[in-house]
Image 1 (cartoon, rainbow, N blue to C red):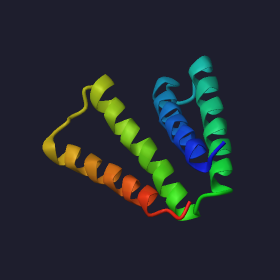
Image 2 (cartoon, rainbow, N blue to C red):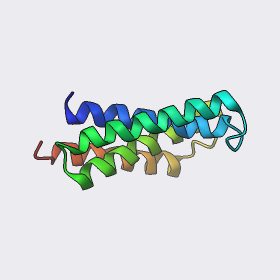
Image 3 (cartoon, rainbow, N blue to C red):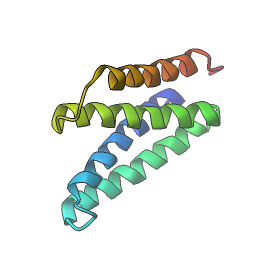
Image 4 (cartoon, rainbow, N blue to C red):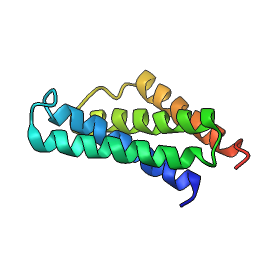
Length: 107
């Protein structure tokens, strides 16, 4: 598996576990807690694979960026959180930063 593919999957799983934390009700609901813990383990495992070939700083920034971006979008879509222009601009800057890191990566 390529480092970038592992990193993308790890980032998507970061969104999943953040979403799971919301539904686990403080880790008190059994199945949402199990799903959250599985997503955390898989996300960390895939991040470890990605770090074998990608620069640490780039990989970590993109991983957290995917998680943050996805969580913000899910919040807007599922929980009707605000999508005001400043928030959307900040979200765009996060995505632009991740794209810039990818394009500037030696791998």
